[in-house]
Image (cartoon, rainbow, N blue to C red):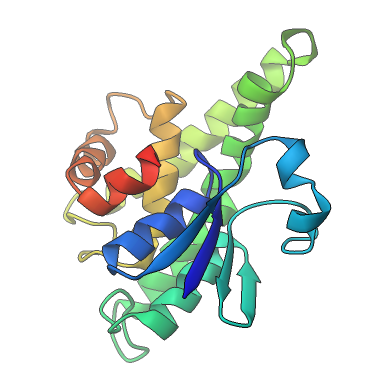
Length: 202
């Protein structure tokens, strides 16, 4: 039985979406986004920094959302969510899968810190402005990518569970402007996906 250690409004939603999309059986351990639970000795035994997601699969325990997505697709899917190495889309898959954490999430993390985590007196408007500018620049190529694709690289793939979820979070932070019409259309498509809806509402 798969077991997912999970917090709402976190990268763990990526994994829950994938589990639901594949209709896999799993046990969900929902943890409060608070140090009392995340930094507990029990959870630090799962993740040394006390973070989510963590996936357990029998005697295997793995953290880092990207690693978990790759693991599930490799071990628990029919292969349809990742192009084979010989497929011309394979390099695109790798590129955009890693674009998420490399280019989109760093400024988004800063925005979250500057708008939600720090107290008002500790926030820095210039740091926030710079982060929003960087995120806008990072989203522009994704908007271009979606000009001729329904999902990020054509069909639903691991890229969507990673980068697609980040686009959803960017929009929640009001960082997807009305000119990014392709991203907005894509997010509307995700809103019609039952597995995605389950993940973001759990």
